[in-house]
Image: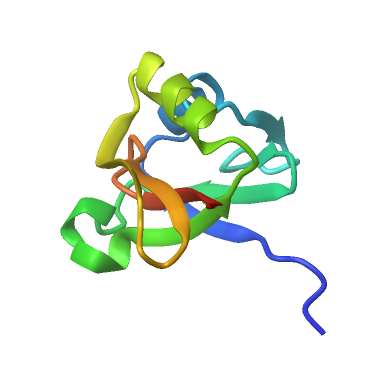
Length: 119
């Protein structure tokens, strides 16, 4: 039984990523006792990030830069918030034939995530 999930990502600049997740995506940023790591939380989502300045930039990974799909209660409001705060939308908000209203966003590091709500 999987009790919960936790994303783990490498980022090139921990400070810049922390600001992006807080200011654009609306996450809380938590220190976790190791200066090279932080935890980003929002509702039931947790993302642990480690500063890895020499890692391959996610933008160079093509489709492998996707790391998750967030299912939310109000996708329209979250989309508007991300756009208003300067988020990099990779796929505009739209209804899809698989029963989701969704959009894509790219983080400051180049990681991509889809965000959607069941129609």
